[in-house]
Image 1 (tube, protein in one colour):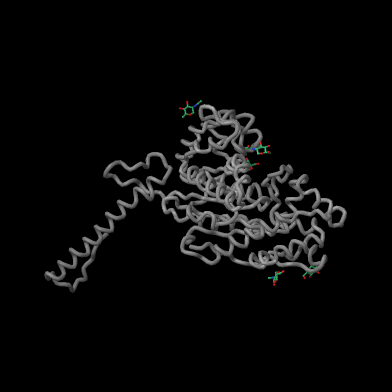
Image 2: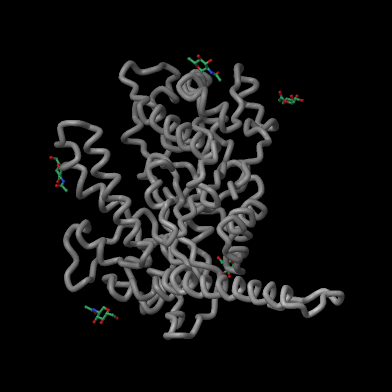
Length: 415
Ligand SMILES: *[C@@H]1O[C@H](CO)[C@@H](O)[C@H](O)[C@H]1NC(C)=O
Ligand SMILES: *[C@@H]1O[C@H](CO)[C@@H](O)[C@H](O)[C@H]1NC(C)=O
Ligand SMILES: *[C@@H]1O[C@H](CO)[C@@H](O)[C@H](O)[C@H]1NC(C)=O
Ligand SMILES: *[C@@H]1O[C@H](CO)[C@@H](O)[C@H](O)[C@H]1NC(C)=O
Ligand SMILES: *[C@@H]1O[C@H](CO)[C@@H](O)[C@H](O)[C@H]1NC(C)=O
């Protein structure tokens, strides 16, 4: 940094004083940055070799981002997860909080007040997220059943959804990428060594975690307010009518009554719609918090509608990565091309992320009956209005898929 003096300035004592003061200020700022940086960048960074040696400032890469995809079941979160998983510098975990929920659910249900049970779970979720963002994968062991032996486990939930967990050095016999399939990873890779996995996590620059178990962004506030964590939240929402149609197809057992309604046209008396009010309530509260732009969310929150992603996957992905402050890499671009243009659009795996682009995002309009659509619209009316999803009042309108029901809305990240 240079302090240029204007040519006309005489070298008077005033000017000297001014220069001294200016250089002190510059030094002070430099020292402050040096003090702040090793912590903000080097310590939080998981890049190997970036531990600062005494007195030597480390080479800075952009600060590590810790990324949480906040979603709900059947909102397209596997797809968004893959956009992150494919990146060569991101360590991705698919729903690790599953283990916390299964091991604490009985305890939480036994508590007298439901609110206490909820607090217990959320507290445990946040603690585990903090551990995982810090690459302390051992902290999962408390929750995995059966308990891992010598830090090795066969039971990590959906391990196969994470590329890093299925590649060397964590998997010697990894299948060729084009024949990739989740079950293949579990069959071929053997037990997962969590110590080794923690090391792999530390060598990659960013950690991304997907979850459907945190109801709303306000529940993450303690993590978002921790500057060392540099947490960024991508909130994924989808038209609740589309979520319903997808849940009915995906979980035929739990949605038997709904399926009967769809097939027979007669509404069963024992219909449970609580999952819809819960989802729409969470969306509404979370999006309201995000759109109100409180200081603790600045730079940390982006709302993504699944429909927009399906319509323009490349553009939206670029926006997401820009928000994250992570350079997009070729793997992600290739994956988008392979998976959104119907190239290999075969297979009907429950969690398949292969999409025939925009058509499937609004495919529910040909699947649900008008009665069902009206029920969702009455339960979720505020949520639909807030997220820019148009309601329909006739079957003609419902089935005319040439007119999208996702209004053109721009949800800019809060920077
Ligand atoms: C929770 O309770 C259910 C039913 O009582 C039981 O089947 C299940 O094993 C329990 N889960 C845990 C983790 O203890
Ligand atoms: C797991 O990995 C760690 C770190 O690489 C290694 O020291 C340990 O021996 C491995 N454990 C087993 C049981 O293979
Ligand atoms: C994309 O598809 C091609 C051809 O099917 C395959 O070779 C390549 O590995 C795929 N790339 C990704 C990132 O999935
Ligand atoms: C949603 O429904 C409530 C009560 O059913 C009603 O008061 C409100 O006006 C509706 N809001 C919108 C945006 O349709
Ligand atoms: C669908 O809606 C468009 C725009 O309102 C209209 O022009 C078109 O005729 C409709 N198609 C059908 C099949 O109703």
